[in-house]
Amino acid sequence: MDRDGRRLLAVNVRTARRVRGLTQDDLAALSGINRAYLSEIEHRKRNIGLDCLTQLARALRMPLAELLRDSPP
Figure 1 (spheres, rainbow, N blue to C red):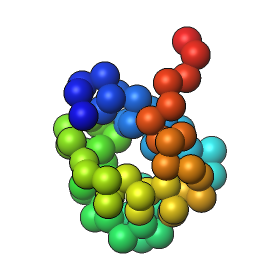
Figure 2 (tube, rainbow, N blue to C red):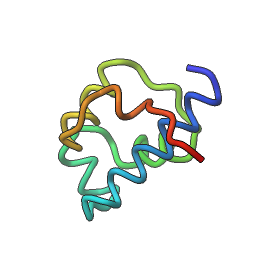
Figure 3 (cartoon, helix red, strand yellow):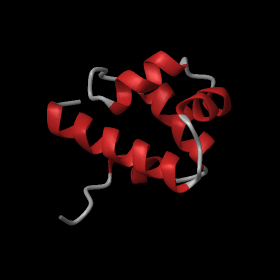
Figure 4 (tube, rainbow, N blue to C red):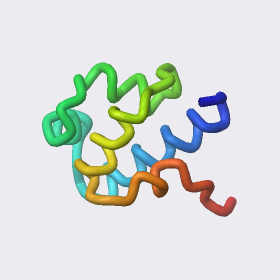
């Protein structure tokens, strides 16, 4: 995933998490992903794999494609 992809993912995960009223700790517990790793995803420091993306999408109860959707400016 290129840097633009990481930016999209970071923004979309953070936004979806906040809209659902979840903390990083909450989402980490729901997804089975380490909270520090989740923080690195949200800060564009990680290039994550499909399994992790799937876990996040399930925990957020949203289609996987939505995590990579480019929002209008």
